[in-house]
Length: 496
Image (tube, helix red, strand yellow):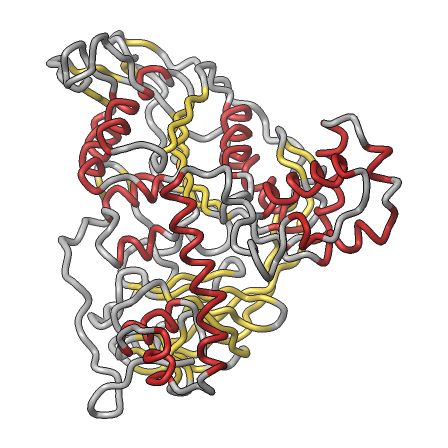
């Protein structure tokens, strides 16, 4: 791993950018120290009152949401946890026993371990227990995360390792196992999977869906975030519609009009009144896809609407009340965006009352065959797929699926169209010409471009460093870029 050296041989610590601190109580939402991102999802907000809720037309009404019993739950499995101890720094002696397999650390109050060290960022790092090791992921912190003097963007360390965050040193140990709830079936409201990780997700969805809590879905493109949003809506019992808005597919002006609506003459081309998504979703669920792409100038307006439960159409003069359940989704880590000043912390609090993380397909190979058969069944071609034999399914399970379930669907469709078992690289290759495109062709331009750039960097940089035998100065010269910028890219992708 490489990191930019300082003149004194040690990294220079700086205080992360100071932004106004929120109270632990932000407009009725209590933000817990143990929380949103560590293991089991925890609802940390007060549910809205069920009586006297004002509807979209300003009438006083009783919410007629039907609360369904949670079925299919009850089975549990033991899950490994982490025990984190602050061994040096302002919070020396502070210890956390996690409630699940993941822990977030930072100065923001909704981290699992909240530190007071001012050289630690709001959302500094995340630690996840995987296969008797700990995956460390720095969240774009100001002063970095290091182990044995090596700066880590992302890497794996053994239990018992000491890591440095700002001026704070922590030790990560194996924690006592806890019981984690599993869904008993392999399908829940359209979510499918037989793997343990998917059945954990289904249990979380079944638990959170009947509540009024806002849910943030995080996962790579193609992991099925919209399908999970549909399941949450279906299981919520809300009688209104599910309305979907893709925040990454439109200009700021169009996003504002889509969300809040507009009056006739509000802007050039507004020849008729338009009812926005908040009004259309009244009594139901509003799903904001790719919320991480929401333009910064619209974030305060969205926050205000969520806090007051009121919107005003563009060009309008009257407030319109609404009753919606909010579900958001992003392929980005919004905590990193908060650290970088690209996403409002107070809006993040509003959106992420509960955070659900969707696993990538490569994390659950036992589900690949199930999904492939589902896609073939939808095409009425199960027999044709089965005729390809066990070897074909074994190759599917061994593939890394950078485009996730969306890529798998494309492979199945192409296989059936060709009438033979293709070489996977002929359809959606992992390496070679065209390797960066799986799962991107159907995305909006901006999202596809950003993901393509990330994939290109991850593919290009290791070869560049290997070619230059680890000499970063030579690599920067060959690439035609500034050495410090190359360092930042290598850190970003966790390349040694």
